Length: 196
Image 1 (cartoon, rainbow, N blue to C red):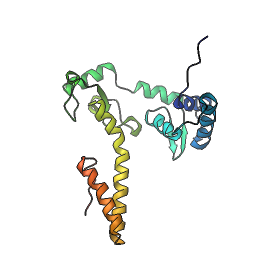
Image 2: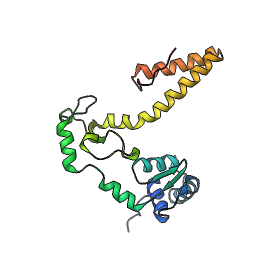
Image 3: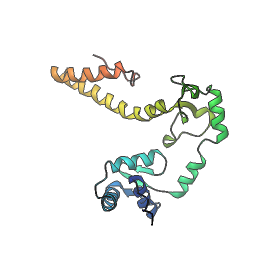
Image 4: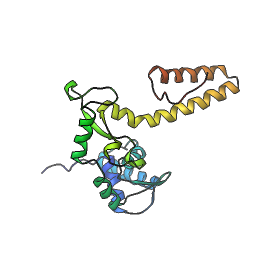
């Protein structure tokens, strides 16, 4: 007799939402249910359940109704799957971009995995058109997805730096400056400018 397949946190979240289709659900009760179920299955509490919910939203499985409230709509999921790039579109985008990452110029001949990516993400209303497609290596595709988080962090440190200047808190000002210089050193979010 074979062991039952392990369920991931995402599997349990999907199970919960599929049992409550087209309902606006606060993430608190979902997290509680998933954690209880996971604890029974695995003997330990899961980590970052709320983050897995957000990821399912970004992937198009869930609709964010408002902060902390999500909905599963099977019709929307089917439509979203239909709205992905077709194999023909992917090939056209890869060909147009010379089968290379538009950021670093590396391609398959360099041993790099290539992704066809939406310039404007689908979860922000981006369409699956050739004009909205670009070729990215796996590394730059990952970086693109995480830059939104670093943008928020940089803006927070700029506000904290300005407050420290106003309050003449030299220690906090120095700390914020070092963090912001690290952003500059690694060319992260250069479009967000801070003044010393």
